Length: 122
Image (cartoon, rainbow, N blue to C red; front, side, top):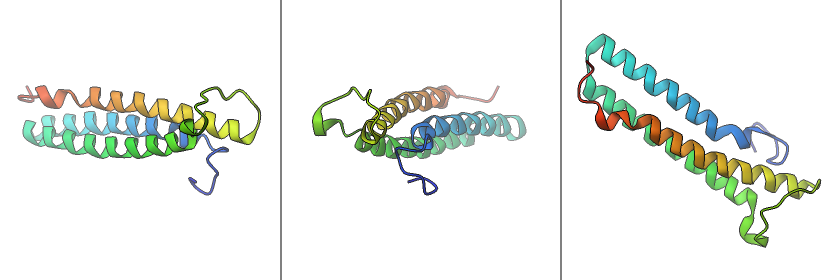
């Protein structure tokens, strides 16, 4: 539950990973801009990117794991949830949340790639 809402009635469970990805994007580029513009500190920028990326990936993995459990795929090996029951809605939101977590993890890794190539701030 997030904010007291069950997993089959809240879209926050589904969009939490892309939200973490968006905050990671803003934080990485903002911190890099400030560190490079004010202090010309490439090493501090690289360390900041790594720390923010580890935190974001840990959150996304946790949300993805919870979505995988909500999807409950291994229970019946059914990936079609086109019914109108609570169970179908819950599994559909879990399925979408899991896939969005995968995409968000790839996005976070892609955003953090400049840390590998950042030599100087110039």
